[in-house]
Image 1: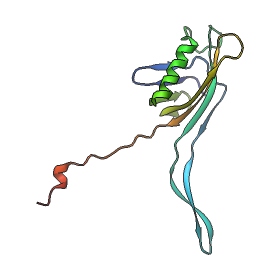
Image 2: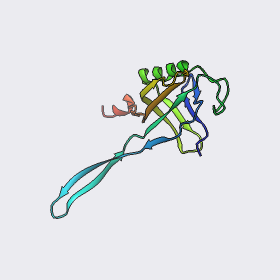
Image 3: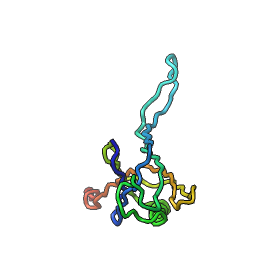
Image 4: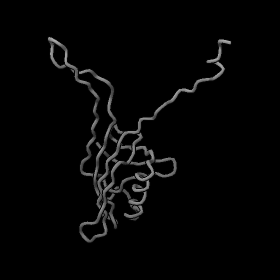
Length: 147
């Protein structure tokens, strides 16, 4: 059961003050389709796709009884962090406690606005898995063995 949602960078940790009613995670895979004579189309697995996560809720402008914690930051302060992470391509660790989601992601889309005059800021965001690229370091001395 989902109990908390955290976004963490090396400099900042944000816990969502209102748990979204739902979230959606998509985990795809890359397949190539080839036609084999006498057999027809076959699918060949190439690799796993990047995980995607979508969620929406609101940042409350006042203390509600359903807030996950008290002394919630101001809505536009939270908006500022998410916009900054999106605009800078910051890697953010996303943790949904009570689920299997705990991974580094990018904020790829962040939409926000006010709806009802309360000052609450409604938002939706899309996140994309960050898969680090590891480039091996080649030691020049070990590649120069033939003199």
